[in-house]
Image 1 (cartoon, rainbow, N blue to C red):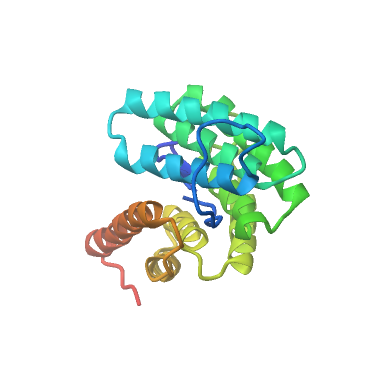
Image 2: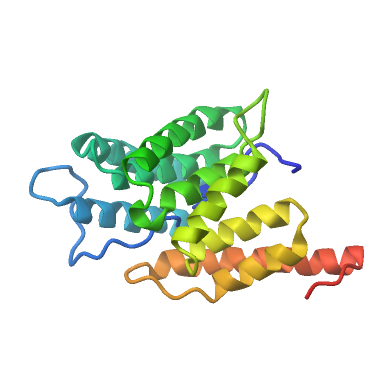
Length: 237
């Protein structure tokens, strides 16, 4: 697969990926890791703030400053819950999103740290947040360049993305990232299938902003396939 160095926002999602599913809670905590806030409240805070920064903060410097603060908060949450996979997944998502804004060689330390966090999360609970560690790992493997620059690996990308789909077959993120992977690999008919599934994915409770932003990315990816059809004369079912 032909890659450039982090030319899209990774989260994860790296874009981004909004990779992770919603954790239902009644209120979001303040930006602290005090014992008065539960893990569910902390995850809710991280996912809501991530979506706000990614989709509603247009200026690059403002985005980076906000993501850096959120990364610091996520790191404290991860340290406070060392045996839980969820905060590690969200810390990795935030790091990957930072990498997508920074781009270039300066992004590599962030994606390497994100990869380590996701591997730890996967070992703790492979199904945490409906397999989001696999979605995020898969997206990293296909968006990061391969050796000798980075750790990118298309075979591992597809393996993780398929595992994520097994755990969450109707989810917007696993279908989007697998569709985007296929698009980057010029497998346009397959890509169209998964991107259309992503577009039709059910809304996630409490994730309206993230879902709306992701659907714009899905439509953009489908438009690319349409352009390929016009310019290359390919036929898609």
